[in-house]
Length: 438
Image 1 (cartoon, rainbow, N blue to C red):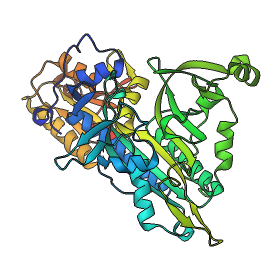
Image 2 (cartoon, one colour):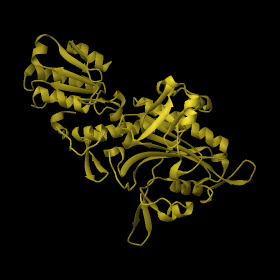
Image 3 (cartoon, rainbow, N blue to C red):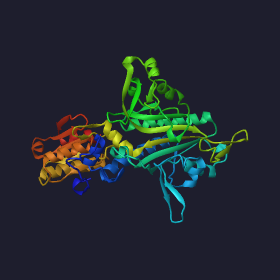
Image 4 (cartoon, one colour):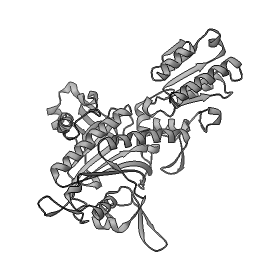
């Protein structure tokens, strides 16, 4: 992409009422624009990142055996009355009446709708296990939306729903999502710690939040330090036997402040290994048995010929929230430092003197080579001063910067900078392209 043809409305300063780093940097980098309280337009730079995160989530769900579908944003209120949640959910639910006086709601989650779909088609245990997921916009009418897309009213979420014949099978489904979450967060350059959590309005008796540590986290978390250094299981696991991978993590103390037990924490974790920090929730998984299938009569016939409610779980990832979460975990004083896997552009190609024949020719050569190699270059071919170009490249956080100017070319060199470390190399253009393109 040539910057002269791209829409990138960067700001030198963010509004003074912005409270956290990710919100400030997303506004300054031209990623989002607020349209109403807690509601944002995603501008081109932000949308590229959002789509990359969405694709990683999708790939790891499919790898773990889940099947993608798409449910509507509007749901019938009667479905929620069947489960008993319509009156209990409170003012966070946006309730709508259409021209025919039908009561609808803008879905904050989809347990009821997916259960209705399941019961319409699945009658036997032979069709199980089944895990359906979708990635869809949701709405919760937060009393005080804040922190940009971290706690907005409209948000993009991946939610998956598992159906099984019995509790043992359902817990295997839970473990698959547990491991899939560790893998997908690792692919985004995040160290996410699974923590026993309150089930809240979703319900059930087993729940884990996946937390990334950040000074601006919304809640206090407590855990064994070893969990921070424990790597993700990776894709090459036995997906039919994951209990060991789950047990290695759940055996170590980890809890959000709602579930924290100071006595247990002190007794189970050596003082040198205790970690208390602020954290950001980026995923939440639940096993809730027949909480929805029983009242909604989503029954299946078991191998013994007896009908029973399906055993269910649900598994959420805040896709739009992750954009902010990654920035909170990876930034510096100059701007965003994107992990390679989610960066909007792989290389910021900077022409220090557009119009100079040698500079233009070298930049065109580099741009063509980078694009052909799939490195998603952003070519700054504008007439802005060099200082402004460098500041913009740092702000938007492309993992690499390739700087081409007349002085360097006269000496047979270009500058290659790694955004994360600030390390700079002066090398011939061919060598730089070899390093970048592999």
